[in-house]
Length: 84
Image 1 (cartoon, helix red, strand yellow):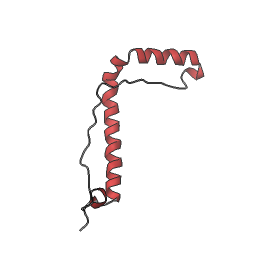
Image 2: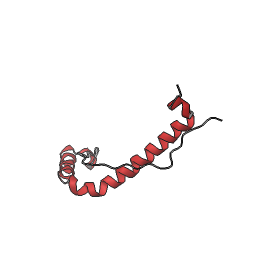
Image 3: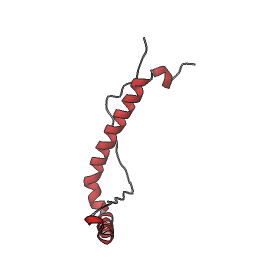
Image 4: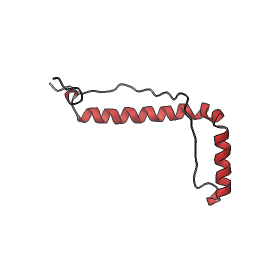
């Protein structure tokens, strides 16, 4: 007689994000090369974002789906939406 929530799927869409990527420990610790590579990547992020955003969206959707269902499986519906 206890009801629980379950999510069937989740979608995530990134809109107009100001994405910046910083990689660490590149080029065997050569900081100048690391900074240059990160600067080049971030100066061209609009080109990369077309490839990167869908991957980020997929990963985020999967994480949200998993965490939400773990949370909803642990607590009944009434704990989230109590009847007064």
